[in-house]
Image 1 (cartoon, rainbow, N blue to C red):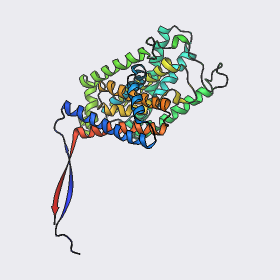
Image 2 (cartoon, rainbow, N blue to C red; image 1 turned 60 degrees about the horizontal axis):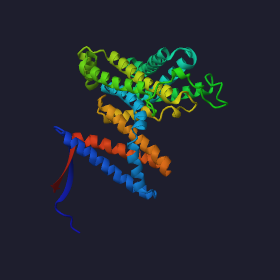
Image 3 (tube, one colour; image 1 turned 120 degrees about the vertical axis):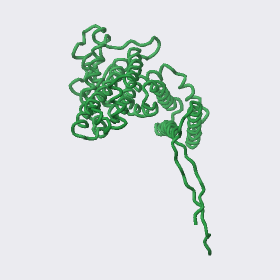
Image 4 (cartoon, rainbow, N blue to C red; image 1 turned 90 degrees about the horizontal axis):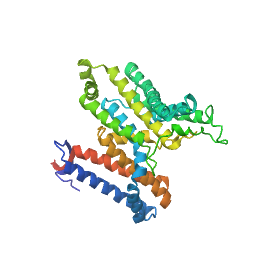
Length: 365
């Protein structure tokens, strides 16, 4: 058998796009979501799930503005906190633990420090101490990164577990309630420590307002202040930042403190606005908001204003997942596949927005 004298091979070339128009951005996002939904439909069929009923339930879920907003609040607070550290090229993966520490601080204030204080004193103190405690919690890995060059991804991730077991210990040990009849949880916080809600909904509007104002303030900080300039320069080129006289430790410590503090405020909101107590299972306080917020920050392209919209979208995906479980009895594993495909499609769209892939057939001898 004679081999061909020449063979062809396909070369793939990846090029960065010069400019991305708004129309192309919207179209690519729409196409990626449609592709993800088609794949999801095939998966639903493989599990003998009625595709039309499932998609109808997803559509109805996205119309439930009240519940989506409730999910959006902690996602937004955690994500805008992550935006500021990611801009500085500091990788805080500990927002989940920082959220829990904020809730612990709020519970301590409401149950032990000043349980009889009026709401106009008690609630601000809960938010302030929730911010401070969580900010200080985030400073621990920040100090290790700034002064000992210890990777903050590992330390912040590990501190999530410390926070998790701290909440479990407090709720089942020294803080266990006297009126809970053997359940491993604290007593309910007093009524004056509970956040007001929009009538007929579960939306605790003080936390929602704080989240939106914080998003605007972080945007102004990053774009129009000297410290924001230092964050952006250090994040893009640490060596150049050092030559420019930018204090590396200052950037790392302050951004981590702010990031942790905002996650702590999310924890205060979840405790004082919805749950009203700590339990030995911290998952009852946070549906992995701190981890999901990493995706929100990335999809928002590290823009705190864009994080408002992306947080709402992510909240809708979470609500749709729960609705499918309850209404159609779909297992949690299938729901995770659904959520993962939607997120994968959005992330893929982000890559294709900035890079184009071309193929060329090249003949070789």
